[in-house]
Image (cartoon, rainbow, N blue to C red; front, side, top):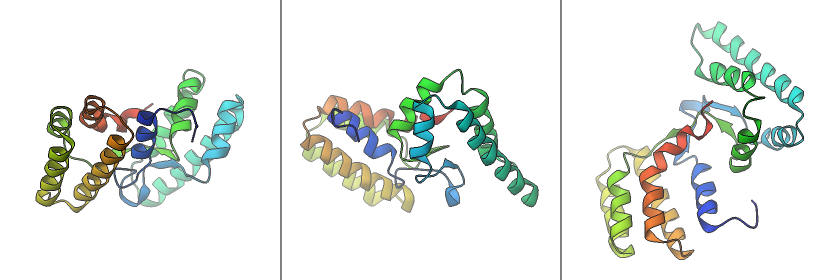
Length: 186
């Protein structure tokens, strides 16, 4: 973590890397670069060693292709890796910024429900009302994955309040949180 990050940036980093809020699909099927591979991948990007990045992605694409042949399936992840490799020269700087934010890399999926109403409550109401609203919504949520994601988000909001992040900023963040899954799109 970078020491000069603002509380909002730390909140973003915490939420985007929480696999209870964002995941890579069933069985981690959308994860392209594992946590253990990420430091080396970042180093290659930062030192502009694009050949190593391309070789790494080609190996990944090859493995994904083998899996597809075994299962007679289709792979969004293979297509994602191919687009990433093909566009490397065009958006390397963007990729460096994103990879510095993420602990691993792939096709993210948000587990939260539509958060527009939640964000409005955060923006307009006191912390106590927000906590009560989230508790009520968590109790009413039938989907266990969404329920867990909402619990985690409630914890992050409490952390954000404790860090002095304004309710307007927190509310906007909550309303737009689902859009973070597009952060890794290429």
